Structure formats: C-alpha cells, structure tokens
Length: 552
Image 1: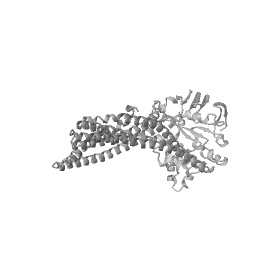
Image 2: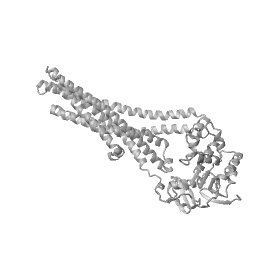
Image 3: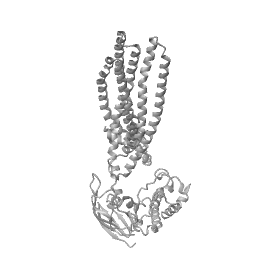
Image 4: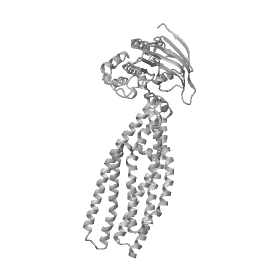
C-alpha cells in the first residue's frame, strides 16, 4: 500500500487525527508505568516491605484512571473524525461518479459502484481514522516495554527478538492469503448488492413471470458465495491472533523459567521479576493487535486500489469549456458526424443535417438506426469520433456543458421520475421554480387535470420511479419537467409510445401550442406525432437515408 496516496485522504483531518494520536501516545506512555508500579507493589508484599504500598497503590489507581479517561476521550474523538471522514469521502466519491461520462457507468456493474460508495468507503475511513493512527501508540508500547525490560535484565530481554522470525512467518503467510481473498470478497459483495438492486427495480417483470422462487435461489447463491468467502476470511483472522498469542505465551513461559533462575541466583529481585513479567505480558496484546492490523492493511490495499481507480477516471470535459450561451435560437447543424460505442461497430456514419430555428423535425427508422445516439451526442453524453455539431453556429465542444444542456429539454421514452412529490419532480427541471411556473408547465403538458384529482394534488408522493402513477401520467410529468425549464430545443424520444392511437392524437393536439417557437426533435414512427413535423428524416444503420417535407 502506498502510504503517501493513503494519507492524502486523511490530510483534511490531520489536526484532529494528530490530537487523537497524541492522546493515544499519552495513554501508551502511562500504560508503560503500570507494570513497574504493579511489580514494585507485589515485590514489596513478598519482601514484607509494606511501608510504601499505600503510595504505590495510589499511583497505580491514578494511572489506571488516567488510562480509562484517555481511552474514553480517544473513542469519542476518533468516532467523530471517522463519521466526518466517511461523510466527506462518500460525498467526494458520489460527486466524482456524477461527473463521469455515461460510458464509464455503462462499462461498470452498478453493484460495484454501490459497494464502493457504501461499505468500501466505510472500511477505508475506519482504517484511516482508527486503525492507522493506532499503530504509533502500539509501537510505543512494544518498544517502551522492550527498553524497560532491557533495563531490568538485558540477558532476559534478548530472548524477545528471537520471536521475530516466528511472527514474520505467520504474518507473511496470512497476508498473502488475505490479499487475494479481500478482492474476491469485494467482487462477491458487489454482486449481492447489484443483484438486489436489479431485482427490486425489475420487480413488476419478476412477478409477472412468476420468477420469485428462481430469483430467490439466485440471490441465495450469491449471498452463500459471499458468506463462504467471509467465513474463510474469519477463519484466517481467527487463527492469526491465537497463533500470535501462542508464540507470545510460549515466550512468557520461557521468560518465567529463566527469570526464576535469575531470582534464585540473586541477580533479580522479586519486584524486578514481577515488573519484567508484567512487561512481557503487556507485549502480547499490542503484538497481537499489530498482527491483526497487518491483515486489515492487506484488505484495505484492495479498497484503496479500487477507489483510486475510480477517482483517476476523467470527468466530462465540457464543464471547463469557456464558451457561453444564454439562450439559443435553436439552429442545429451536424457535419460529418461519426460515432462508435466502445468495443462495438460504428453507430453513425458521417451524418450531415441542418435543423432550422423553430422547426419541428421527426427522426424515424428501425431500432438501432442511431436516432437516440444522435440526441446523446447533441447533449454531449458522448464525444463523437469525427465531425461536429454546431448550435447557432457555435461548435458545442466549446460550449460550457451546463450552458449547453440548459438549452435542451428531453422527454425520454421511459419517464425517469424520482421518489418525491409531483411538485418536486416538475421543479427538478428548474431549481427554484415558483408555483406559478410549475402550474404553467403542468398545463402545457396536459397534466393539470389529473394532478388536481390526486389525493394531495401537487404534493402527492409518487413513490420510487413514479410507481403510483400510470404510464401516461408519468410521461406528462416528465414533459412538464422539460417545459418548466422553458428550453429553446425540445426532444421527445418516443414520448407518446404508451398511448393508444386515440389517446396519442388527443395528447399531441393538446400539446401542439406548447411546441411553438421551439426547435423540436421527435423520435417517433407514430402517425399522430409525425403529423406535427415539418420534415421527416429517416435513418437506417447510422445513415440519414431520406428526408420528406410535409405540409405542416
């Protein structure tokens, strides 16, 4: 693990982390006094020199009280830092994921992304705020105990380094296994999260095809796989600390044996013997903890690598563009546009097109012809392989992405609504929209009437993805959301596909006035919608093959 890259995530909290580390070091320093005080007290008891016992007991109790207070303060401070770090790190990852192009999200499993944002980030923040800063105090305890043991009896203390090869061998074997296991476990947990998210979203289809049992079994397979990996990881951790403890206990027995000989020889007093043994016992806990930390470091290495891999991804470049655009006239010119999705054949082959300001055009053609891809390129969801798109004569590659997307209102075939109220979903198109603007947009989208019949009108909660509304109602809310931003360019991507012919005709007729004075692109093959268009453009296999003027 690269310590420098790891510490960059802790840098904003270095002051609070330094305070926590200082208090932990103070606690370790006081802890080092406890074996000496206890040894002196017990030595006094066995040598019948009890005149200083009261003072020793007082100092020992004071030391224990101070250690307890320091631990309470450290737990509260480190908990607060951990919570803040987790919140900030999650926000940083979330913001970065939002800034990445669609191509990134389409190339990565949603479960991996959700896992990274939740427990992977939590694991890293816990490691930084608690585990990492506990290493110096633990090292102080180990080194301090060794130094004090050397002062008591150098020959006995030299037995301690003989344990290092045994510790190293255990850690090396365990570390190698944990490193690979941590990566497998992350992938398994991401699979569990991704499958659960997918099944919940696809619940209507799951139920309609009566696939509950099969999907439950598939989910069980995923969680059993993750469970087996977790159990394997737990077995490694469960074996590591006892093995370290066994080595430490064996060392303590040997130390006791040789220390007893020294006492009999008169080279070691009873007080020194007790202090020495207490220091030897004190070593076992931090050594075991350091061994456990070694395992956590191996696990965190994988988390850090995945996090850095995501954060190294370059965000959409258009936000740094300097070109400004207040309100477009709506002229769209496409010149020699070519595009291919990563790893796929070319989708668009040299498209040339001019859409005049205020014109309504319809894009038709079979599925896969490239119609929606052309709109995605207009919005700069992707970058073209060749050619360019101009808006009012200005290459959109030079227009600030926020300015560009503010000019375009899109109503997709599948209405994308959020869990919240009708009002909030419409206002999503224009943050800070007034009630008057929201109501006007609802009227333009022919949504006003049905909204008035909802239980709480505009304040009715519509559920996840608008599940409490019908398909037509969701589509009208999506259209109102596009209208509220009053875009000079409006794109309707199969926006009437949920209507029957009669319903579509009524909807199109009612919305016709709202389309005036805008550049409108209709992606459709339905007659009622085509009747709105002044030109019909037919695409096939990524090529514009036919243009038909209408009498509209």
